[in-house]
View 1: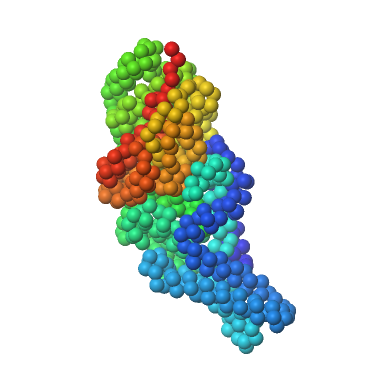
View 2 (view 1 turned 90 degrees about the vertical axis):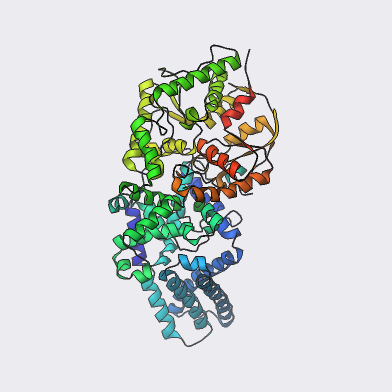
Length: 197
Length: 421
C-alpha cells in the first residue's frame, strides 16, 4: 500500500500541465461523464467489439475486489458461514477462470502476444491465482501457506508492475476528462458528439 | 531526446506511460491497425514504445529487470522504430483515447515521441521542409507575396463580376477591422475559389475584415513535429499580426490542425492566454446565421450530401454541432457517416501525413476506410471544413473511384447565399 501511495504521490507532485487556452466547457461534468457515460460499454469499441473479453474482464475485476475484501475477513478470522463460503468460493472460481481465460488469450493471440511483456503475464497469473486460492481457502482447502505466499508476492509486486493501474485508471480518466471537458467535447451535448449511434 | 522527455514528465504523461495494461482492445479503434492488421500499429504499442524508454531511464527496478519490465535504452533500433510508429503510423486523431479501456492519452504520448525526435533533428525530411518553408517565407508553400496579392486581386475581380457589385472586396492589410481572416496556403496555391467563397460570406454579412499579406497562413506544421521553438515562432507571428493590424477577432480558416494549433495549443506555446477573440470560420458562419447577418436559400441542395469531421476540429476542438446546423439549413438530403462526429474515422491525411511522402502508400491504404464510409452514405457531395482533409479526400476520390464532389463548408454556404439587392 505504501508503494502504491508513493506512486500516486509522485504523479500528483509532478504537477498538472498548464493550459492557457480559453475553456469551451467545464471540467467537473466532464469528469463525471468520464467515470460514467464514457464507460458505457455500448459506446466503447473496446467493449462492444469484444464482448467475451469485456465480460470476462468485468467478472475478473469484480473477483479481484471480492478477493481483496475476503483477504481481510480471512486475516481477521471471521467466519462467513458454510453456504456463503461456498457461494463466494464459486464466484471466485468463476472470476479466476475469467482471469486464466484472459491470460490464455494473451498467450495464443499473435497480436496480443506481440504487444505483451513479461509483466503482463506475471500480473495476470498472480491475480488469477490470488482469486483461486481465496476461493479454495473459503472452501476449506488447507492451503494457508500457498495462499499467504501468493498474497505476499502480490503485495510486493503491486507497486512495481502494471497492477498499478488500480489507481492509475482513475488518474487516466481524470486527465481524459480534463482534456475533453476543457475543449467542450465532454459531456456530449448532442448525438453527433458521440457519433457511433 | 531525454531532455525533452524530462521536460514533459508531468502528471498527464506519467499517468499515460504507466497506466496502459496492454489489453490490446484499442487496436480496432485505430485506422492504421484496421487497414493493415499490422500488430506494430496497435495504439498501445506506441505507448509501450515510449513507456519502455521511460522505464529504462526513470525506473531503476525496471532497468534492472528488462526481461520483465520491457525497459529499453535509446539506440539505433528504438529510434528507427520511434520514427516509423510516431510519425509514420499515427495521425494523432485521438480516436483510440475515448475507446481505450483505461483512457490513456495515447495521442499525447505519440506527440511527445515526435517532440523527442524533432528536437534531435529526426523529423522526416519532407515534413521538416514544410516547416522550414513556413519559417523562412511566412507560409508553408513558400508563395511569394506578389503572387499571393495577384491571386487575391484576381479573386476579387471574379467576385465583383459575379455579385455585380464593385464594393465587394477582399481587403488586404487593413487596420482596425473586426476580423483578421487567415488562409490555408493551399487556397491561394490550388483552390482560390474557396477564398472568394469566404469573401462572399463576409460581404453578405457586412463584415469589416481583412487578410494580411505578411502572415495569412493558418497552418502550423511544427504542431505535427511538435517542435517547441518552431511551433511557438509560427504562433507568435500570427498573434503579432493581429496586434499589428489591431484586429478584434482572429478567424481561423477551414483547417483542422491550424485551428487546433492556434485556438488550443498556441496559448500554451506562448505561455499566456490570447488577448483577443479567436474563432474558427465554422463558428463564425454559424454565428452569422444565428444572428441573421446572412441569409441562405434553404434546402436548395437536392443532391445527397455527407460530412467528414476533421479530427482536430471536432474530437480535439469541440466544433461538432455547428457545421451540422449549417448543412441542415442548406441541404435537403444529409446523410451522416457511421461513425461520425466526435467518434469519426480519420481520413488519413492528418498528423502531417499529407506532407510526408515517405508514407504515401500507407496514407492511401488507411484512407480506404473513409472511402468505404463515404460510399455507404450514397452521397454525391462530401463537405469537410478542412483543406488538409479536402486534399486527402480528393486523392481518395480518385484512388477509390468514389465519383463524389469534395467541398469546404464556406463553398457550400457561398453557393446558397442570398444577397440583398
